[in-house]
Length: 295
Image 1 (cartoon, helix red, strand yellow):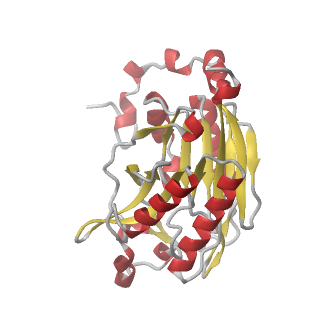
Image 2 (tube, helix red, strand yellow; image 1 turned 90 degrees about the vertical axis):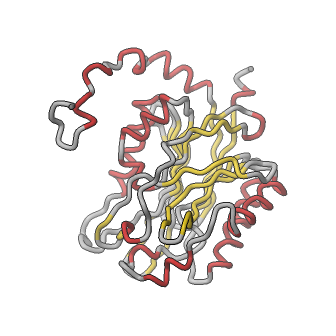
Image 3 (cartoon, one colour; image 1 turned 45 degrees about the vertical axis):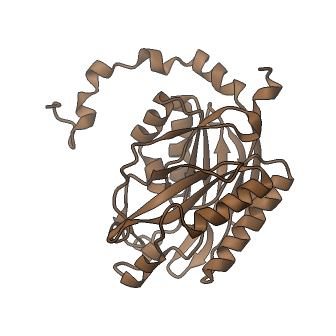
C-alpha cells in the first residue's frame, strides 16, 4: 500500500442527551450521517448515548428496564444506518444478557449493517455520580480487537469503554493483539463529591500516554451537556502514536473529524521498539492486588 492508501478518516459524535431516548438515537444517527457525508468511514458514538446517564442515580431498579439484548432494537437501528451510509459504527449499548445480568457494552457494526462484535466494559466504577456497579456486571469479553476495514483500509481496532481508559493494562493488551486504534466511548464530567476538581486534563493525558507507550492512535468520544449533578465536559479528541493531538472538540456538541495516517504508527514502532524490550519475566507483580510476589 502507498502512504495515501493508509489514510483513514475518522469521526466522533459528541452530543448532549435529553430524556427522550428515541430523540437521542435519531440525533446520534443524524450526526453520523453528517460525518459520513464529509467522508468519515468510521464513526464513534458516546457511552450509553441513547439515554440520560442513569448511573448517577444509584440503585434505581426502573433503569434496569432500559437494558436490551444484542442483537436488539438499538443494534438493528445502527445496522440500518451503517449499511445506508456505508460506514463502520462504534456505539455503546446497555446490554441485557440474561435476566438479572446486564453489561455496559460497546458494539461494532460494519458497513454492510452486520454486527461485527461487542466488547463489554471490564472495569466498573462505583462512586458519587458514577454508581455503575448496581447496573453493570464486569465485562467478560476479554478485550477483543476487531479487524476493521473502514474505507477499505485495514485498521485493527479495540473498543474499551470509559473507565477502562484509565488502565494501562487494557491499552497494552489491545496493542499486543494488534490494535492500531483504540476507540473509547465515554461519559465523564464533573465530580459531584468534589466540585472543585477538574479531571479533564488528567483524562486526556492518561490516554495520550497509552498512545505513546503502545505506538497507536487513541480516539475518545465523550458526552457533553449537564444532566442533573454532572456536567459532561466533552473534549473528545484523537491522539496519534506520539501523543500528538490530531483533532479535538471543546465543551459543546459537535462532530470530531480527523484523518489518521497509519504509516505514522509504523514509524513510531520502529523508533520506539517497546514490544521488543518488554521484560515479561519480571511482570509477575502486575497479577497481584498489591504488587507483592506473584503466586
